[in-house]
Image 1 (cartoon, one colour):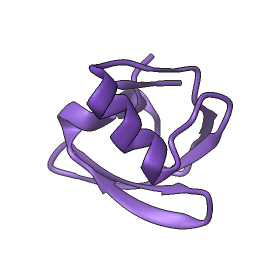
Image 2 (tube, rainbow, N blue to C red; image 1 turned 135 degrees about the vertical axis):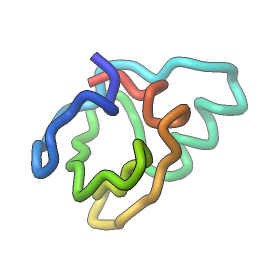
Image 3 (cartoon, rainbow, N blue to C red; image 1 turned 90 degrees about the vertical axis):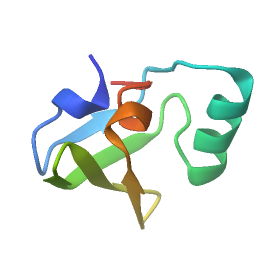
Image 4 (cartoon, one colour; image 1 turned 60 degrees about the horizontal axis):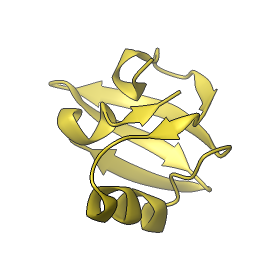
Length: 69
């Protein structure tokens, strides 16, 4: 399921990153790698603030929907 469906405070494991090579590379540079953990901190208007590798990252709804957990 996409990261956008995760509940606030839920810790999940990244199973797959969808999208073009550039998009996958961008997300990997932010720390979103297969097997990594991500925690949803909050949601504002469909956009997410998540914690990945002890860093908070803001993601748009479309970008978060490419991360499968």
